[in-house]
Image (tube, rainbow over all chains, first blue to last red):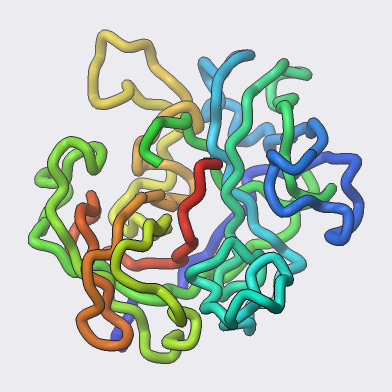
Length: 137
Length: 137
């Protein structure tokens, strides 16, 4: 296929969390992710204007420890589920390992640090985008 | 800040749509996006295994016409809304212009082409990831 690209993804910040290892990270925030700090590079401070406590945001991360060569997996490690293409799963292992996380901003710890309620990403995970959350998706 | 990266994002496919220009694209799918075809590179065919009509997917795109230097904007072009950091908007103009779209698979047009119900991205937009949709987010 005649695709364009590749494109250069530049991290805008990083996750600070008590989660230190992938084995500690729950599959989804609802399964007990701890609060976290999102530290944004001060070079992007203007892009945070009007973010305030109570905001619901979509955080996109780069799951830097993922295996980009994986194409099929048993979802949630459950071998009773048939082998499934990674594009029909939420596995971090995929060609472009972008994580999607919905968070609520609890506080601003300085001008470029956002304290959020629950985030299922380990300490040091690069952040690549923030968006205001909406019903779709 | 001492961030890692940058990372190389390799498109996995492309959007085929009757939307030809950004000026035709609605802000969100609910505002009348047309059906579209998602053509996946056959090299990633295995990663589509078990995707079938009726599946709800999150499609991540690379909004290749976006301005990556924009940091603040009036949401939806409405100048009565105060200037807002792009990280608190859904503007395509942002440092890493990744689009998030929720779609329903209507049909498979061959092994690596997914016909979907509504997608607010113009023809030729690169696709960088697919995930199964869940309530969160």
